[in-house]
Length: 82
Length: 158
Image 1 (cartoon, each protein chain N blue to C red):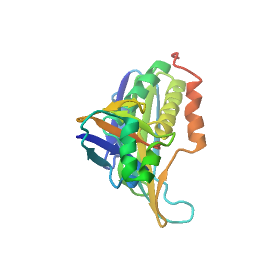
Image 2 (image 1 turned 180 degrees about the vertical axis):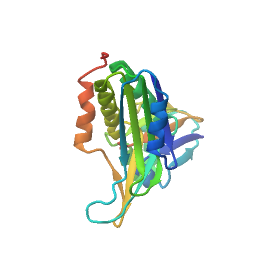
Image 3 (image 1 turned 60 degrees about the horizontal axis):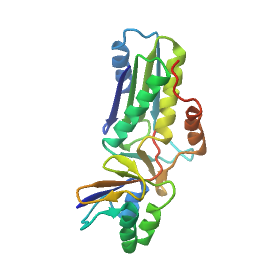
Image 4 (image 1 turned 120 degrees about the horizontal axis):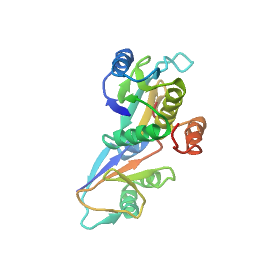
């Protein structure tokens, strides 16, 4: 299983901060988003917004990066602290 | 430079943290501290709850690398960042930044730099729940512009 993390408003759209997906073969971030979009179009389009970034096992990656079982992929919407 | 980053899931006491920070110094003549707290109301008198989320591990590493960046730009003896996560009530401290240097300018500028990073680049997500429900907060244009000031002034050391 790969672990998906949805932060900020993406967690509200996904119905929870964490989700596990079983990947029989490596998926690019884009392909994984397409799978999620098939189940939920609103979530799918939110994950593709310009200002959303992706972190694979703690490192920022682009949508070509490959995700496989055991990985942790986080979806990071615009941040705001302080 | 001695740097410390803490993400706190329960309330912290800024005054006690500042006292401990100051006590541990031995070479500084200047200490700058900034405390951010939850605004008591939004102007219409309504009480809101603020919630902050972080990405454990990655958030801390990002702030630590900002401390390293600050240490390259200014000559600092020590720097401290404490940031709350979880649910916060009005008046509760959200963030404490403390910097110490031999003379004041470095400490002032480094604290300003670290706050600009925390407002718009650190991996923290803030939502506000009030009478009209929950709203995710995004940085204002001013916050992005504030942070961009430092990009035009790359690390060089002062």
